[in-house]
Length: 253
Image 1 (cartoon, helix red, strand yellow):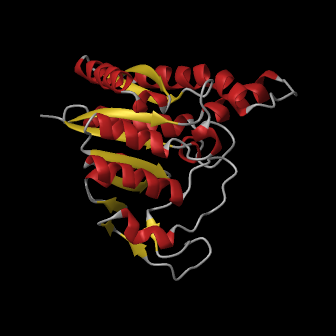
Image 2 (cartoon, one colour):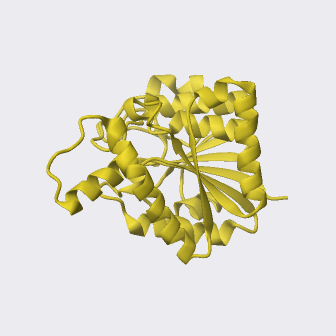
């Protein structure tokens, strides 16, 4: 029986730290999924719609940016999915778009329909690519970068692992960008154990930070899902983490 792996890819990973989508990073993800599809059912929770919109506006010569981040997300979402679709299809992978809001998890019927849809897509060999429906909801735009959303998805489908691709190797006892003596934490038994270490690093791209990841870990802990924080900047970060070739922080189920 295949394991279910949810991979959350944030804006900083998708852009490789630049202000544009990194086609090479999406190709890297697709190439790894090809090698894992016989043993894992893969679900992707992606950010990056606003980054895709900014890239399009820059390339099209528009000088006026919409004031609303929700409007930017509406412009960027189809372009983001087009990039995923084109790259994944070139690797023989088929994707399906799922746009969700937190209301979908608050109501039993909506939650069951969401679970059924994702399960059916996996059954027929499609990779669900999930993002928040930013036209009607904006919580992840303002704070979270889909950390919470990915945890809720992993919870309702009873995933084996939620892998959050971050711009850092995992959790440290202090912010390693500010303190060179910060110690790495490889295993966390309870999210509350490391709450004191949630020292943020500012980012101009993503809205997620260690606080939102700890919140995601709390949701996973509730549902009995193991959560990993992995450095998405590494090429091959998914397979290397699964094979124990790179260090990362594991939140036990």
